[in-house]
Image 1 (cartoon, rainbow, N blue to C red):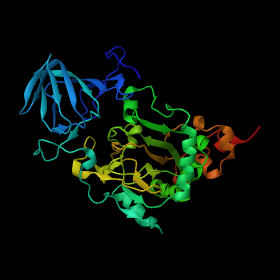
Image 2 (cartoon, helix red, strand yellow):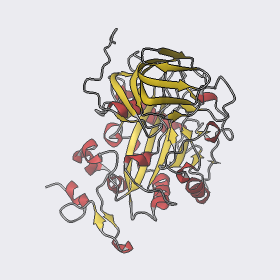
Image 3 (cartoon, one colour):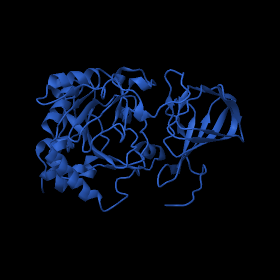
Image 4 (tube, rainbow, N blue to C red):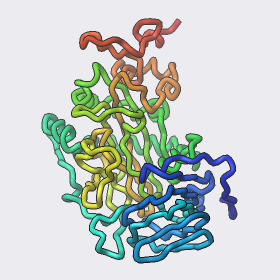
Length: 415
């Protein structure tokens, strides 16, 4: 770990502030909260931009470099001023002056603002203590599963919890195999997308692995789990003739990882409309207990219906509190995010998402899974990885994903 780091704007590309849709954020490659270093980034807001009353997860220091920043009931800050605010302190609204404003943000915790609903309390509460609509806020189903009811819950509310999808023995087998794969490399699976913004979204203390069918063979049965595949086919069926594996991913959130940015997984495809039938569904299968302390997933039920730009208020969250072996099933167009891991141990899960067969998946399974391995897989899993066409001819459509104008499974035939 370095004992010092230099932060400047050389080679740093701005992007539009995802929390407000205006102004620019400049992320520092060394300032992503990794290896004991703080989060460090530069904000440039346009004139007269207002942010609502909010708080932050940790203490934050602001170093003002340009323009004015008016914080209601507090002060006006100008270039050369330095401001500090305590974790959980609610303040605002705040507005830039006629020339806009610019400031550096420095924090040792997730700096993403959390809007305050009632505006009446000076001190907000951590996200891990926010109220939920019930014990975890999502419909829960036990064996024997009523899949019709599960389908209705996911299609309407957006999500449901399925208790005991995996047995204890299955969980132990998966964990043992994953332990064996990741134990030899402390950096394995840490973000390296090449985009500082995307790596910050993935989490600097979170291990993520794709290509699970290649790396951990026990996951093959889970990815092609007949109940999960049939569930995905039913929900996506009116939008597509078949489904693909969008991503099969190990997600291991390490201690000290802040809450993930809230997002929709369908944001991977720009301008994709949200309709009654989803084009993407997710199953997060817990391999450790999910608790309010170690980062149980935040989910905003019903948010697939919301207009673009609306964010959940604190009383609109549910939490996917689960035991190992349970799974939370939800629409990919639902607003959600991993919670802060304030425990002293990692929180492990396998996230499996299925998409309409005509979409390009997030995970490139043709590169992540070798042909030699793909040849040994059962046909259902081969098809999920892309070795089957999307054939919409019966629905008066066409075919996609062809190999030499035919079935891509032929690419697996030995010469």
